[in-house]
Structures are given as C-alpha cells and as structure tokens.
Image 1 (cartoon, rainbow, N blue to C red):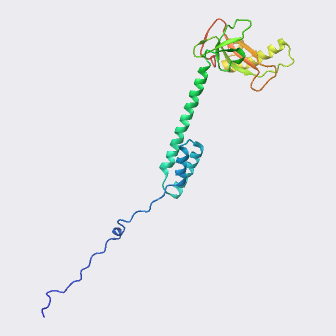
Image 2: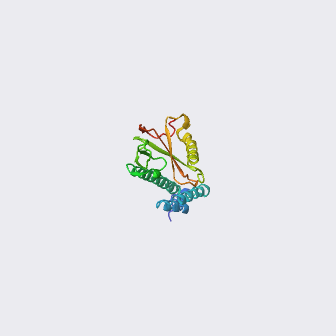
Length: 221
C-alpha cells in the first residue's frame, strides 16, 4: 500500500466575523409618534389650537422617549402658522373693504362712526346730514369719540356744558392738545340723555371753511 506523501489536513472554513452575521438583517422600524401624526392631521383643516397642543406633546415625547415624527410635528406647526397668517390677512382685508364701502355715503350726523371723517357745512345752524369721506383725503370733520354724559334732568344750557366738558376730555386724549389751546373746533351730538357705557354723546372736530387732511389723532393742532 502506498503511503500518502503528506498527512491529510482537514479543510476549515473561517467563521464569519460577528458583524457579518448581521448582514441582511433589517433594522427595527421605529413608528411615527401618534401625537405628531394627529397634529398634522388636525392642522390641515385649520384646527390651529389643537394642532399646536398636539405638536408640542409630540416633540416632548420624541425628545424624552425617542422615536420618529419630528418632521410631522414641525410640519403641523408650519401649517398652523400659515393658517394664522391667512386668517389675519383675510380679517385685515375685510376691515379695509368694510371701511371703504362707507365712503361717499350720505348719513345722518348721529350715525357717523367714531374714527370716520366726513364732509359737511360745519357753519350750518341745523346740520343733519354729512357725507362720509376718506380720512386720507380732504375732509371737513372727524368723529373722534363717544363719551358718557348724565344729562337727565339738566336744562339745555347745563346739558350743553356737561357734553362739552366730556368731549373736551376726550379731545385732549385724541388730538394731544387741550381744546382751549387748539385751532380746531369741537362739536357734539347728543344721542340720548341717559349715560351709557359706550357713550351717549358723539364728539366731532373740524375747522369751518377749511379742509383737513389726514386724521387729527395725535396732530397736536
């Protein structure tokens, strides 16, 4: 029998490294935080307060416990901010449009809103109607306040003195100069004799024979 020229060695395959055993094994999938998902969902239809609360809870949970959903939470906050801006713009445009709709109308002087400017003959003894004007343009007068004044039981002279005193107090707050030292004239319209919280005397200012330009708020004239 022939003897082998060399001893037979067992064939050993090297074991794979520990790292290679994990090749192909998927990492565990972390689920999106439920509060973050809910925050984004409620932000889309404009439920801003609820979306902000849920997004805040989600961000705190993710920071404390880990997990995914930061992008969703921040997305909900961004959508909420867009809603706030859109609502603010819409309200502003509506207020501007509402203000401009009144310009040019002829109304009773007692129906002039505070902050409105108007055109009228201020030297008339019986002024009843005025035309609403744009305060940015030429106008003869401006309604600057409504003040409460207790006029029940007073004579005509006493009622006039009380209304004048109350409007004079509002005048200095509005114009920035006491009525006694102002070049502007002051007028009032008694809406009712009983003093009410939102004012029963309408206070107006102007300069007979002269057109004003711009509001007299803070004008110190």
